[in-house]
Image (cartoon, rainbow, N blue to C red; front, side, top):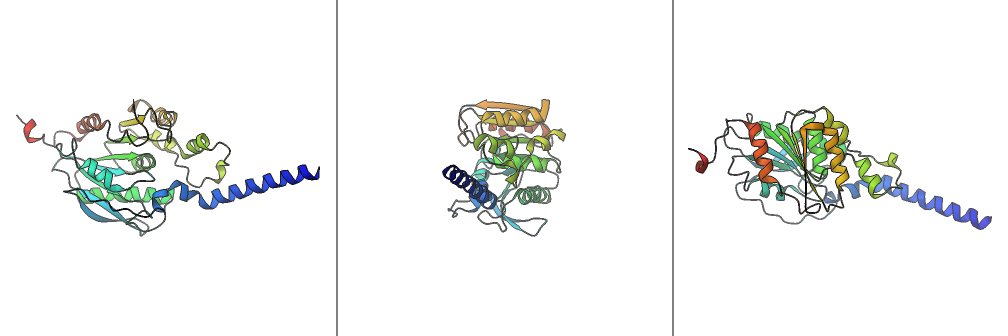
Amino acid sequence: MRLLAGLLLAVLLLCGLACAALALGQRRFLYPGAFSPPTPWPVPPGVATITVATSDGETLHGLWRPPRPGCGVIVSFHGNGSRPEPHAERFAAEPWRARGWGLLTVAYRGYPGSTGSPSEDGLIRDGLAAANAARAQAPDAPILLHGHSLGAAVAVAVAERVPTIGLYLEAPFDSMIHTVRLHVPLVPIWLLRDTYRSDTRIRGGTAPVLIVQGRDDTVVPLKLAQGLAAAAGPRARIAVIPGDHVSILGGRDREAEAMFRERVGPTCPQPVDQQG
């Protein structure tokens, strides 16, 4: 009996230590890009480096490319292990460039170039600051919100408060709670500090939603994206394509550009080679 009691005590102690580690260190797991050494990444041609101020006094590293007059702006949010430069490079190229789209993408608080420490509330403030900065730089430009993985959760949260012509989401999840339960089913969910309930936030919107999901994604499995699409209702379209969590990026850009260009309207002129 003493041996059994000792083993039970050891198990309880290990569980307690695991819970304490999760409670204290979970944001290191959730926001790895904020705790990794920065690596050089060139700024794409035609894109300017700017500083974006948040409502609570943080300053964010941002990358900006203005739209052509009458055209839209993509406000893009990167994943938890990424940074804004790859998104700037992508959205400053085809098919977006030819159609006059501008772009703004920022590094979240605590990520290289930005002040502060990451949290759900903080990243949502960062997203709102980015949308406000895009409106300040191009007051008449319609905003398309884009996000990959964790960035998709930020985009959905921003769409609750900012007028947008649509949501373009790659590898999104319906909630962090569902994601953690799927990957680590024994973790006490009540310890989770940042829950990212995109499934409840997306329900009240009216703008169209395009979701692109990799068939072979093990980071954000298909069922999580399907759950978000179901929460969005009939305004959501989901495209399931070959690829994993990262290889799908940009795989449906031409479809997305054409879909959301219709929401910009006739104020955005066609490329020179398309005009009659």
